[in-house]
Length: 412
Image (cartoon, one colour):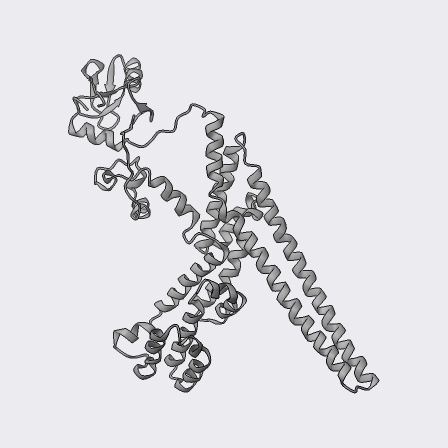
């Protein structure tokens, strides 16, 4: 770029953000954009479907357990030599069990129907996405992403109010996260029973994914017994619940068992860390990861993923310099932190955007350089000169000069 001072160069880099054009995109490009957007909706369908399958499996287990008990009761009654009154009493108890099973299955069926409706509602929502209603559809998606973020950050009431006020309850996973909330609250209160119950309900799937979460819970429960100086109970507990893990987690078991000798007041760093409260925070984080994997969710909130996708196109070394313009999102610490793991944007050609009009500066709207080194588009400066009798005022420094004092900049 000729005739451009250092200050002007900094100014042009600072306005590199790609502008939003007002010209309508061709329908084909909008359709292609919509098609690409729908590819990101995997979690949107996967979560309710997984929840639906889990309910079916739970009802199936209840049915098998109850029917097995009833059949065993009938077999015992047939083989036993019962009096008439005893036989009637025995059969009546079996009928009561069947009636209880019927009520459980009816409730399970109601829940399954609601979950099937939720799956259907989400399919209908995706099918409703069209070029004509794309702004409204994107607005709904933004609200879904915000609700997802609030639920992951434990703002359950706020998430429920946002979903309710926009009538998108079937499009968000509040009930799924409420299930997780019970376990998280219990772990934060140093209770492992709800988490162990959750592991039992999902035992086959956790085993398939080679999860260590249940093992970590058992270790923590053992540590709490050692903390309470109840060594005999700790040893009994280890024999019952930890020994099955010995073949695959020998080193971890050896380390934890050593706490019986070192106790909770040890100063040995290797064992002292096992008694620190932060271990419960690790369990909460691990549960969240296992929970997300189980339901096919992303480990990061969707809001973070979408923001990082946008920031990856904006991130350059200049963003982390002290004179980075305030219009750049990466001038803010929160966005910088979010973009930290992202690579720098690969830009083959620079794009200059006018600070005043936010329009692209190119050969048809070339940049002009003020005496103080700042650069603005010809269109913006011409309009300013017409309104001020040929005078130009720099919006950033307040410098006043004549339009004839400007120097045209050339982009090479």
